[in-house]
Length: 532
Ligand code: 16G
Ligand code: ZN
Image 1 (cartoon, rainbow, N blue to C red):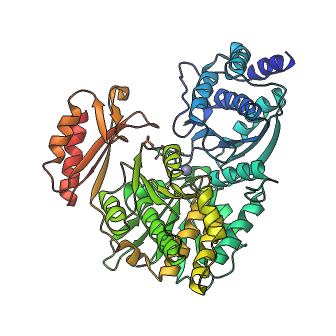
Image 2: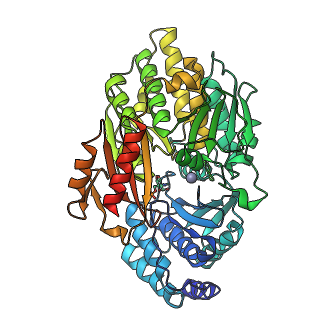
Image 3: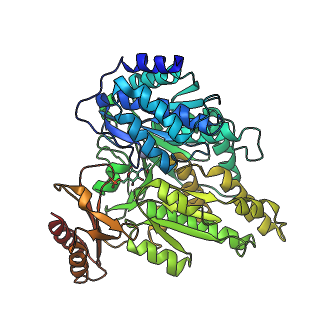
């Protein structure tokens, strides 16, 4: 009753935007920042309930809108092992976010009953935010919801999204046999730096790496992290302006580079210089360079996945444990067909294709001992099963070479953020692999040739009629459209195309690839017209 009163009182400080229906989507709630107060309030309430339901384990709340424009913001919940919120709870979040403020305390009570939450359990929530100007106001709202419901909380201030996921996992494994690390920013840097050093034993990085930080939270964090690294890795940080709020994700960052297929206009990189871009909350990473003919070359999530899978596969073989580890790759429909071919035919590894959205990929990756998953947009990581960790740890090496490989694998399990895709951790992984292979980005690009592809955004009257199946590679509705797409793609050499409703924007996305640039463009245009 006291809590109920406190919720009502606190809620009435805010005003609900009229006519808005909120939905917890693939990336939590995300929209114009000035519409978010009541949503964040609801998320604060739910975070406390989730923690109580899980007997007081720490739940994370991240305030960010990732690669979206500076005026947007968003909020999402992080589960105890640093994973995305369990799907069933997304509906609870949606329900609470849409409750009228006058009755939100009632809806809260109903949820307590529906979910069967033991209210005497403790509740603990840890939160952080990216550098958006609206973040401090939203954190204030979060604070009010947690205070009203008497939740213990910890404010980590500015963090990258993966740093918060890391802290959540650390908090919940502290003192157990699965202890993940020290639950602080410093602990995160130390863990990454020391494992990177171990992976790099005996090899050296060639040249420097220029990292575009999207003018987001990754900039200051990467600068801080560099202090923990030995001088071995020469990182040049660019686009790290977090003072001017409008510069965030503007003409830079991983999303810009991937969708525009070009370097940020501010880039001064010379031919063959290694470049990378993070997104606004540093959970996505893409690499690129200018080749000798001054042509922009992108090394996206598919490339990072194939690089990681090939390296880990080689290590497992040289460590003599490849029979004991089931290594696999997880992709979405957006993965370039050439990468799929390469994984299956050259690396000879199994592939699972899932729906778009990190939680789907992560989930599928857990079905392998070593699950390498990346979305083409650069979000991804590698998961290691309990069996994998055991085998890597307990295998007796039969030679110094085997020992070296086992040590390297062991260090990789610490270097890779297993909770979620992490641009800083992924970047260290890529740098280490290139150093081990003695490769420049040119050799990396040379492993296979991407099929030219095109992505088109199509505005439609009602995107909800576009219902996909087969991991979003086919449409069951509207009727007849799938047959049409198939007939179109069959006219092109290596043609492949699909259309799916976006989960984050009011639009349908069309993807097409084919043997040549003009065929890919043509196919995309025709399928887009069929969708309209
Ligand atoms: C979200 C997803 C991302 C996915 C994108 C697709 C997470 C954390 N993020 O940003 O993985 O690629 O949505 O957007 O799951 P779309 O549905 O608009 O194409
Ligand atoms: Zn992001």
